[in-house]
Length: 408
Image: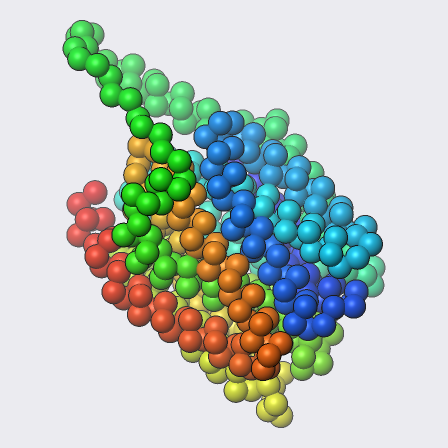
């Protein structure tokens, strides 16, 4: 019940995400416009974090996940039936908002329930559940395209995953309630029977914006470095499909290349958690950013090469390695610096910032591609990756020192 709902959601999303710009292009959008439409997913995630934090605080993670799954289901149905690109874009945006609510609910639960000594591994497993879907999903999309000869088959597959998710969350055991019951039992066992003197302190609940202001130091430094990681991740999801279209590959071949990249990504997710728990967060974050930054810079030089298809596959694999090494790092860093008594408001701020990086990157890439070329856009993403690596090198030792993790 902790990881399976995430796997279901990401399985459907993994089948659809690589094809969103392809579907948009097939419905009449230019390459630059298709990139903008694909970016609606991450823009929706950005806009969904604040209402998601409110939902988790009011309803708990279980009902937040049910609402998110239901809204996603409606959004995907609309994408299939959309009469215009505008409606299609709005539906993709709504799915992104629902994905934000789903992710925040699970992140808040793991932050408060998982012991620090294996936090990174647990959150890497959560990231691995997502990566499993992003790994298998594109292969399923390729199979569905070959079988039904329409991209809408992947959208209907996402609908099936969402129906299964909602039923599982509604009728399966609730891990949030089970964890709360275990805590109450632990308190009862430790009760000495002595009278309690003094008042019980009340937790001051702060809104997302107030929490963001109170923690502006860490958010403006470590948070910006984390946002750069989110930026190159989301750029990868847009750049690779559009690059494949621009060099003449068909939808099935693009889905296959993206799937191989996801396979490499998925294979490394638990190794990332092991590295972070044993050696520190920086040892996973820095190599990941360097690989992805240099990968985009190299890709920008290969568009007109005679072996551009080979380069496309190789760089997709390098980006998969970099993304795999960063599995769970945003979740773990957010949990590390969040107040443990009430993490939801801070995590809403943290995820808003990191999702902002993910939302801006495809917009920036599409704008540069429209004005200049796809190669220029890919180079810009590479520069962001290198700058993010420098930011992690500077701020992780300050805000998440290795000694503090070991002492805890």
